[in-house]
Length: 262
Image 1 (cartoon, one colour):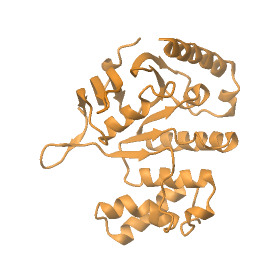
Image 2 (tube, rainbow, N blue to C red):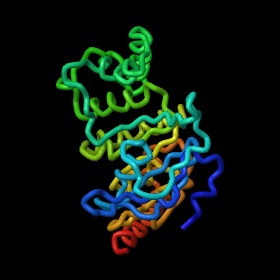
Image 3 (cartoon, helix red, strand yellow):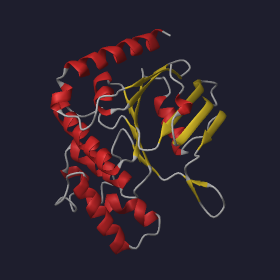
Image 4 (cartoon, rainbow, N blue to C red):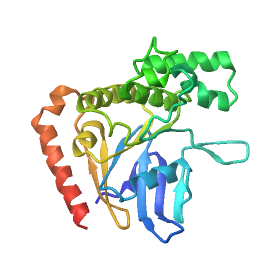
């Protein structure tokens, strides 16, 4: 397995990270992982291997039980604490049902004290970036599953985070919608180059999207493979139907099978 700690200009580095819950369950053990600035990295593995746990540790939503998390390239606040600048997209859109799309996207800006007019302008720009211009007043009940997820992505990106964490955001969507959102996500990433850590169960999705695929084994969760995907961007249907894509999927499928047997 490659030494991921040797990446140039890592944005976040995990060293020996473990998480044990109060009931005694050891969710992840001994995770060493470095994510470089502007990278698109997928975490791939079976259910229960700690992918979502790692994402929440990176986000600061839960604490690691052991190990360290370093932000060597992060900006710092007045007290010297790292400004992580993180956007998080959950498995479900978790939108406020009583508010329109614009108000939902404005939420993190309003919580940060951004003036209402500025927050509205930035939220409208973020909605347009995910293809929802004209839907600013639409309530979640009037939106399709894919459109709700676009609102969720816009809300995560409206603060212009340096790192975007995505926890299986497209898993519940139909295949056509999922393909479209994969393409749209890559277009946004290529334009903005925010660092992305993407959790998925899909070999095909991980190969299509990623520069690197970190394959994890379960019980406890740990990294067993770190596979580079060197095919160039932009990627589209020509890549998805290419021999190179099929070959990469076979490599990753074998690595996932090994991880499940480990």
